[in-house]
Image (cartoon, rainbow, N blue to C red; front, side, top):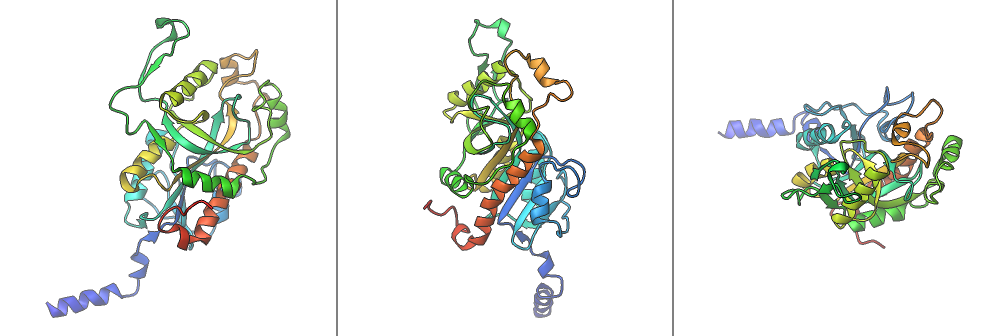
Amino acid sequence: MLVLAGWLAGCASAPGAEAQRPVRVKVFVAAMFEIGENTGDRAGEFQHWYERYWKDATPIAVPGALGPVYCNADGVCGAVLGMGKVNSSSSMQAILLNPRFDFSQAYYVISGVAGTPPSRGTIGEVNWATWLVDYDLGHRWAPEENTPGAPTFMPRKGYEEYRRFQLNPQLVGWAMKLSADTPLKDADSARTYRLRYPDAAARRAPFVGTGTHMTGDTFFHGPGMSKQAQYIAKLYGADDYVITEMEAAAITLVIKRTHGTDRVMSLRGAVNFDQGSPGETTLQHLDPAPGQTAGGFAETVANIEAVGSRVVDHIVANWSQWQAGVPPLR
């Protein structure tokens, strides 16, 4: 037995043992899709993050995840999880449970593009979630089967613990403190497109804000669906609905079941309005003619990383204050 114990002890310190230790993740950045390659072509949601943190990183394959995980020497890791609730959350689950990583003290930035109602946001803005609300969980019926003008949505009992999440207000406060004054890019095409809308919010230049992010597998469009999203947000006691996206609530549920939600951030940039301009039908808005799109996509994905990296870099540079949890907001 003594011989065996000595052999095992020798193995623990043998060459290569260090390489088997799990990566201690400080911040994990989750994107949903990339366009083409991770660098050198048109940027999707991941490319600017990749070029900042992982250009020299070796990809780590994770069974069950859509794509590999990349990590740098500072403990910043990231991956493309896939679009939609099932795609993204299954990837997140596989990564969280993989023994190659230690997520026990990790912070999360769920990052991507999104839509916004013209009454509350604009093309190119970047928004930190205060609440995440699942748009799909409940009962719906056709408007013609209802009292005219009345809501066509009702919550389903039993979903209370995973239909909405309030993100850590102190962490949201830190995110805004660190990033609210980030210089943001804009595009001439987006400036022109905004003028189609009479709303003051829609005509604003890009800014950094906060509010409820509505997660739905449906790309809902039109003033009626936008009004329903706001109704659901208020029904659940959340802040104003300002962002429509497809993944964050599902990813957060997976993180909650493994590590809780105190260190979760959701960061989205608006690349479209959730409804057409006055005089434009919803179908026209969904299928615009050539040259009639909002523009500003390239600028928005750059804005997302510019805003989010301020928070990532601060956490990593001040890890001794952040390691045990979100420090008091000063």
